[in-house]
Amino acid sequence: MQSKSEQFTESNEGYRQFTYLCPAQKWTVGIGFNLDDVGLSLEESRVILKMRLRAIESQLSQLLHGYDAHNDARQAALADMAYQMGVNGLLKFKRSLAYMAAMDYDSAADEFLNSNWAKQTPIRAKKVTEMIRTGEW
Image (cartoon, rainbow, N blue to C red; front, top):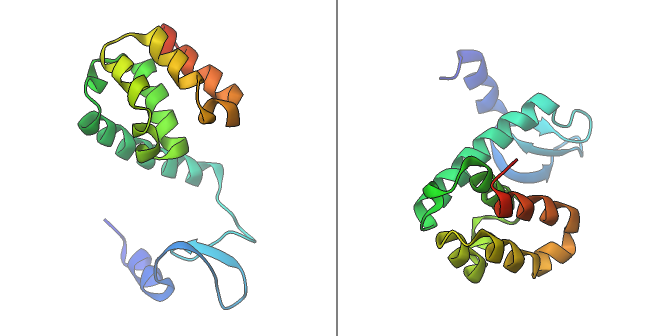
């Protein structure tokens, strides 16, 4: 629940989902978050990360057959991929996800590694697929 102070400032600032140039010509987003001069603190970024990962995990639980049967490390690996490329981007990995649903983790990892995603972000892809393969952090 917002305080009266928060409500007042939000009503003055307004809300914008995407970045825009404010009247002072500063890149801004959300409820007046000045990205040029202030940016986002680590704490603010972690709050946003937590909220977005929770939303992603909820979507994956609903959309991916067998998602809830995977252990925490494998669920985290899939959520990390969805965070990076969006849930719809992850859902394009149909063969990999079929292997995941069948709990054939070696084949799933191999299939994920045979992708543009793995070529574009090889270090991340190796970490993520190792978690899928082993089920360990």
